[in-house]
Image (cartoon, rainbow, N blue to C red; front, side, top):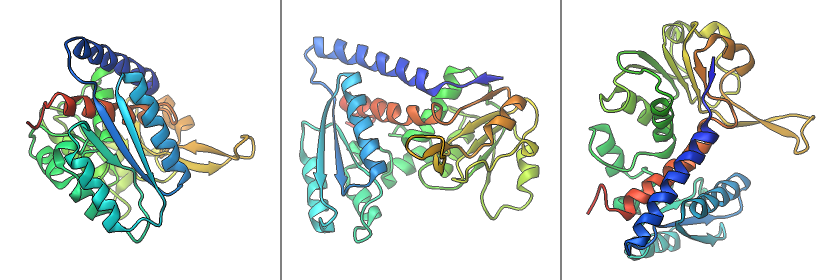
Length: 292
């Protein structure tokens, strides 16, 4: 059984990005610039944005953090989005989700210039991804593809079960695993209403669990030799920890891991790759790789 180490892989990729950035700067090219909008004071969002700023530093990027109180109106936020759209010194930007209930997340996502949408959430990027055109691929699915590639895990012709149908992970993951360029797999998408879910999983060579339920994938759902990619990161109470909780994946790691040929841990698996892929998308934006 092999542990797929996302933390180490992300560190390697960030070093590769930094090397390329310094080479570009030496040629007189401006450093890539990522901006982030953070609304309110959600603890998880604060942590994510902080880690994104640190990743920018590690990659040699410029970064800008724009903070707003959760009293900001949708109209005011859309004006800030438009300002970043028009700022030629900003290569890409993100609006950290979730947003306050009075703001339409979809309206904000659609207002972002798709050429600067390094989160890969704009319908144009989602549509281009679905039909295999160059675009910014959302960070978590792209990170999973990168892990499978770097660990040389065979995917072509394999049966892959994706657990979850979210717009951010499940749906794009299934699309990518189907496409010849990325997974070239036979893909089944399962969710909370799926019949015979256990039987579907037992046939899978690769299970990508993104259902948001701690310990959902148990040993009796996994065939020997399967590859398990655990996207779940749920806080569960743990009195033995100083902060009172621990992160749990969607997979019962302790009992499932001995059956697998390879598995991602939580934490330290898919999570570190997500921010790293945001950096790759930003580098692509700065180089105008997908859109002129």
